[in-house]
Image 1: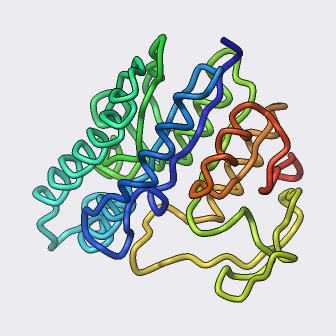
Image 2: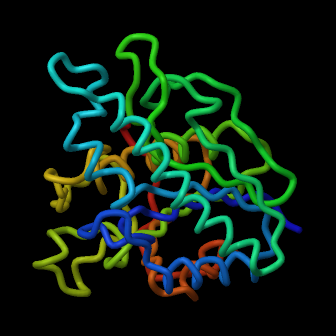
Amino acid sequence: MGGTVVIKWGGGLITHKDKLCTVNDSVIEELAAACEKSSKKLVIVHGAGSFGHMKAKQFRLAEGRVAGIDQDKAVQDVRNDMLELNRVVVSSLESRGLDVKSFPPHKWAKGTGPTFSGTLPIHDGITVVYGDVVNDDVNEFGILSGDDLMLRYATEISDVERAIFAIGNVDGILRVPPSKAGPEDLIEVWNPEMEFEGEHAVEIDVTGGIGLKAARGAMIASKGIDVVLVNGEISQRVIDAIEGLPVVGTRIVSGNC
């Protein structure tokens, strides 16, 4: 087996983001099949999509404790919903005979953003973690983004070869919003000094969309680790990205982060 690859399964990729708690079964199965073919040790970070963002947005969970809003049930509901999505992800991998262990962040992490605390758990087989509602010393609770988990895993565990963001519907970072873009708008190599226009579903997303992925990707790249964004709906691209082969997508390089 080669080195370690840290890969994000985007929430908008593995769920139907406009339908509460609805998985995209076919995509999850294709991603699991790609992992089965991998020669690398894998850390999988998956997003929340419709299992987390809608309810988190409604009850303002990313802000922590907000006076006048009954948030306690929402915190538990989102955690339970994420456990259910995680169960689907893990089952898809295990059904292919893969050795998988999941570590729900609300059980080991505290705080939000890239400086969250907690020892990163790692499994000898495939490690799975995900964006979650975690405890916070200042705000009581908050949303720990999968993109921040990507940053920490990619830069703090040993033998990481590359970090991959598998996203839905698009081939990588585009110069203009996806609804206006053509093939010529794909940015093949991006650094933080380059501007782009992303679409952020502010009515749903609570963790920053493509902009946060780009920012965290640049921070990872600054540590000398290859970073690539690929269309996760095209499984061969995911396989090629894991193996370090040339692939259609966006390679992120370090710059003025």
